[in-house]
Length: 68
Image 1 (cartoon, rainbow, N blue to C red):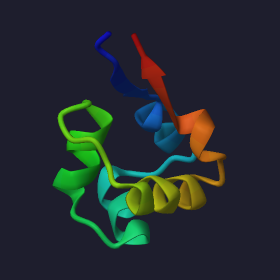
Image 2: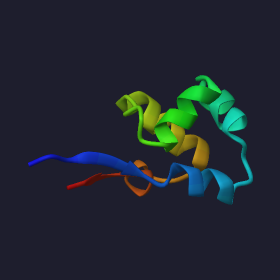
Image 3: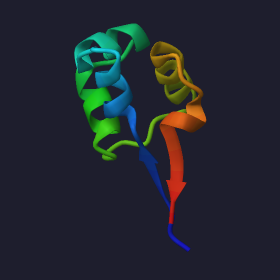
């Protein structure tokens, strides 16, 4: 069974009117890191996922989920 991590990070970021750079700064990472997470190229660590959720004021489960 192959699973992948899906997310709606971009939609939530845009909902708040944030750029990738602004979200990255709030989380202490680079803009490229936010970009690669949004595009499912990079799977974030638990710490980064929690930082993103906090910055977007959303539960982590609302931002990330497993897809089969």
